[in-house]
Image (tube, rainbow, N blue to C red; front, side, top):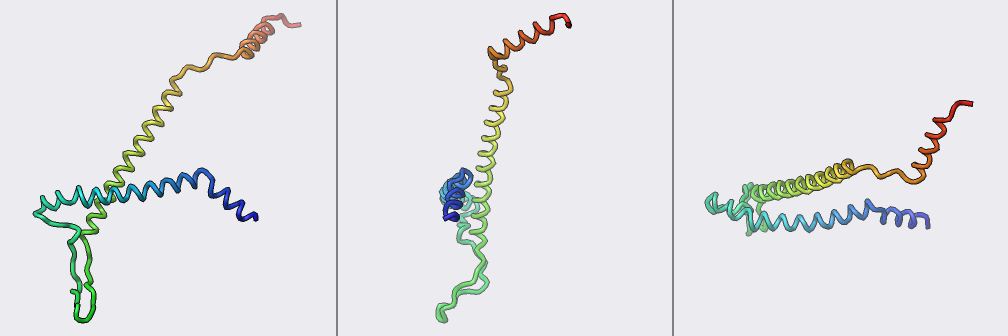
Length: 140
């Protein structure tokens, strides 16, 4: 029974839940980036490069032999180029997100530092008055 309780404490800890949410959002974001690269970024690049479809670019090391049921062996460098572009887009988005968070944190810290200190409480004022009275009494 101790194992189940320990696992439950681990699973509902804030960091684990935050990590799970991050992974799920990251997977969804990855699909968006893949679609953005494949459907929006690469077609104009291919058009500018003379109608090249990068996703289909490959070096054939051994052609397919359908008569003997042998599959083609190839290095798909076009798919690799698409993946590099996807990585750069994700890295740039993460950079912008972290920069935004750091800016917000710095603003909060500056706001906290610029805020005037709170006025002394009634107890602090009373203690200061007692201190001053005792300080002004002649020594006995």
